[in-house]
Image (cartoon, rainbow over all chains, first blue to last red; front, top):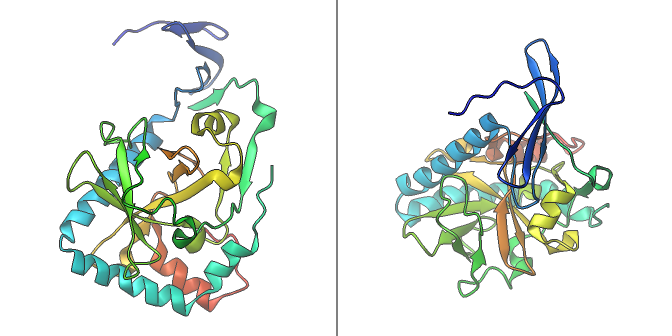
Length: 100
Length: 171
């Protein structure tokens, strides 16, 4: 790992088009500003890890409930519940306008 | 640590609030095993798998299955998050909107991955990171919203919405 020392208002360039700037240091918190092309996603690491782990679980769970009949039975119980409680469906559909 | 975008378009954040709840059957054009959805960046943890199709069956409605064409056995059960979480909304920054190529909120199909377990009452949906598909370009990304739980118990939510109808934006 490359280790660089930076102060407030100093930055690092990665490649041609990614800039990581130290904006402010407050106690044990560091405010970082990132300028990157739109095609590059920037996420907090722990959040990204959570998504990776849940994606893996979602797939593993599907495989564990391996035969499709079981899966359908499991999902079928939802269908019944959702049909019984159409309230949740109405709420979603009543607001058709997306606000800009 | 807080990461902030220095985004010149910061003031143009698009608020996708209560996007039309695109129930799976209403997007018949996309839910078709012949129509391939391209995930240019893959899906986190499965970055190399970029081509998927939707499979649906009346038996499992309102769920559908997003199946990989590249890796056999890889697939995700999905649900419309607006259906299980009435107050759900998606706020996309202009950066995300450009990445997704969305011209209008109606082009977005939003789905959450479902973690199916044998006990259906413990089934959860990933509201933290929904899949957003541009149905015009047939291009999808998993977007991290940072507002909702990664494991949202949908059984409890659906039961609750039947009991307490006055409840709003509870998730």
